[in-house]
Image 1 (cartoon, one colour):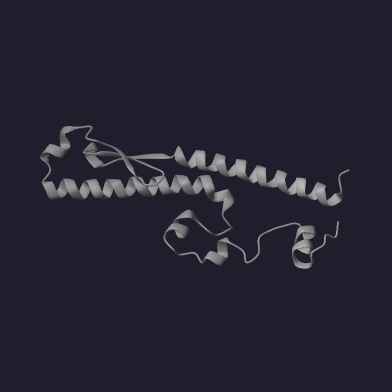
Image 2: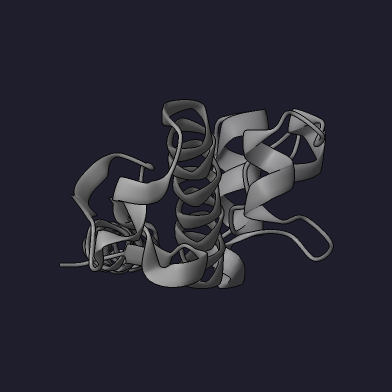
Amino acid sequence: MSTPYDQKIEELLAQYREQRDESAETRRRINEVSATVTAPRQAVKVTVGAQGQISAIEFPTGAYRRMAPKELADLLITTIQEARAKALEQVGEVVSTELPEGVTMSDLLQGRVQPAAVLTEEPAMPASVREYIDHGHSGV
């Protein structure tokens, strides 16, 4: 025979499984992020992944051949930075529904957000579970 407490545990397990599945889906979507930026005059084209890792560098035209080494190096760095920013923006869009209002992915990664703004002092839980934790019995 199932008690109300057993039913509540089953509900909590179901919520946990749902959150776990949602987290796996979010991770999958993040792993699919890819951003490509082409520099002016199509001298260089850079593609990066979700973590900013470079997955491709291409030279679509011969424009790079007419550039001084420092100019090409600076252009590569700028293009890579732009591609990383674009990828970060895409990751932010994927996780935006998971973040508290007013908190952006960029703010998190750049350390502009206090942990308390994202993680509450106490985890969210039903009142009956809180009652059990605090007093050793369930109000159910």
